[in-house]
Image (cartoon, rainbow, N blue to C red; front, side):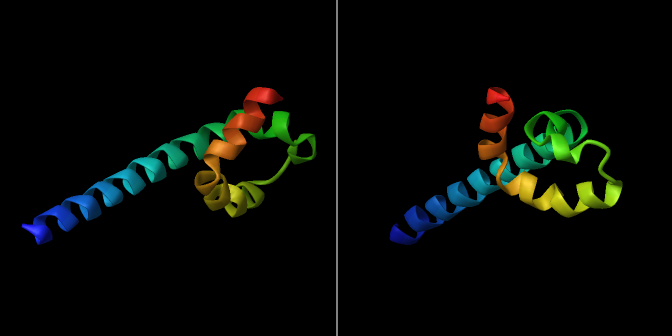
Length: 72
């Protein structure tokens, strides 16, 4: 019984991380195409290489960047 309980928690944790990652990936694509220039004017005219480099960080830190985008 105890194994089922801990497995349920692990499955919930993994499901939560999957949802967070999916939201982060969707946000990163939207942010890099529409919002990065509002948050950081220096990013205007940046290259595809720059966008590919910052993509994982944007996906991981999406709640922070969403807040900054809303305030900008």
